[in-house]
Image (cartoon, rainbow, N blue to C red; front, side):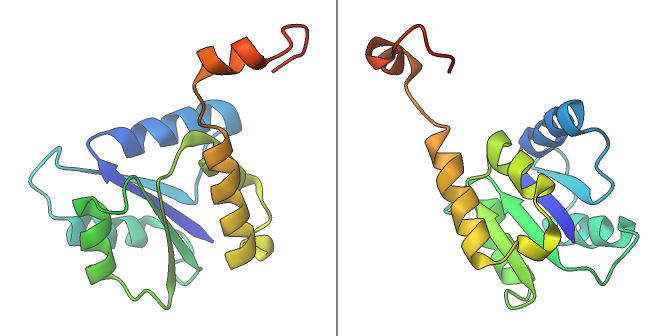
Length: 137
């Protein structure tokens, strides 16, 4: 399975960089930073796909915002029946997606990962007021 992270600005490269600090080099992942140069999205997508060793492997595309221009353009460019697209990507979600066995990345598992990613978002000050400070968090 291959993965493309496509976001506004250098967020995609930043997510990939952070992931590689934690998991090591990711041969199956490409980052597409949009609006940092004049190259159109379709060219960046095609180049990323051509860089994969296994060009026929299933593809998962991860974007930053559902209503954002990157996600909207992607949905027009790709065959949604052949590609899985997840939006609202964050580092915990990406780490989980990349460490799960590819055979397990079905719709149910992807929805579970999305739910887990949402749980990672919190207002820490409020959390600490309600948390037992003796617990590890």
